[in-house]
Image 1: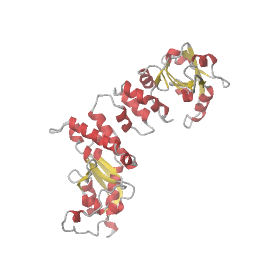
Image 2: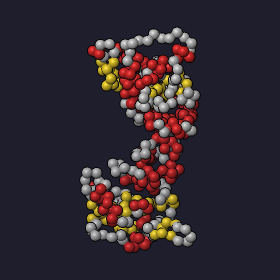
Image 3: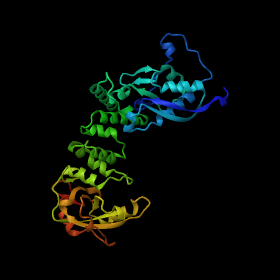
Image 4: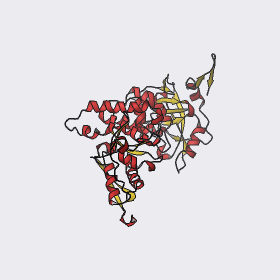
Length: 377
């Protein structure tokens, strides 16, 4: 084959929301389909480089964004960095086409289309995953666009069954290559069940480990949260947010206000009187919602948690009614400072925890020990 015949081309991926990577740890096909079907072997075309066909399809599927907008995009054109001959391009195009895609239904372990392409490319799958169209999502586009003959309720049940299959196959759900598909199932369920609140189970499927608070805030802004979801997820989502995360204070206040005062996610008696608290932040972010009893913790945040900038320590004294929650690991209060921003002052570098505030919050900082003793932290 003259390599000059190869060109970089664009693949048109049809039904992009339905594509997934299946782990090569569980081979989809282990025997030549010509043999299992008792038919004459297909003619082997030596000019076809199946490694290139596979790589082109893999690159095209890998580039599909896992987001709600993809559910409404019938075709995504992807320019793949793999040079193909015309024959190789036709095979790669058929793999991701609307008419003859490689289709697989993992719940029943059935390959509906594409066994020969899977067999011919099997030596090149490695550990990167095998691109297949999931039968569980193949008709989603018709439902979302309200096409005649489609059943929204049946499709919703089918997606729930697919998600349940992954829950009951933890060895396979932990394959990294299948995570985008599992999130796409959750996005599809989100669209089909709007405007109902999202359950904690579906929320878990929507998220990555490091974006839980962003997803939760987005759902809350869209009116898709309730006390059940916020009670189950808000504390942990807040605790494990990343430094890059930026959630509008009004949204944070709204989420925590829905639950009443909490101590480490559990309902608790709020403190009384006034609270003097500290925050490490840049000047423009000084009126945020996260404040601490301990100036040393605020100093740490000011010096190490502001990206490529350096913040300073701020101090505020507010009525305890403005406290929405307490989180013990950083002695942190969530505050609603709306209208009280003028009370925020620069803290003295030698500041120490305020004694009266510690006294008023002592019931929040007690950790039960054995017997009738508590540890005050």
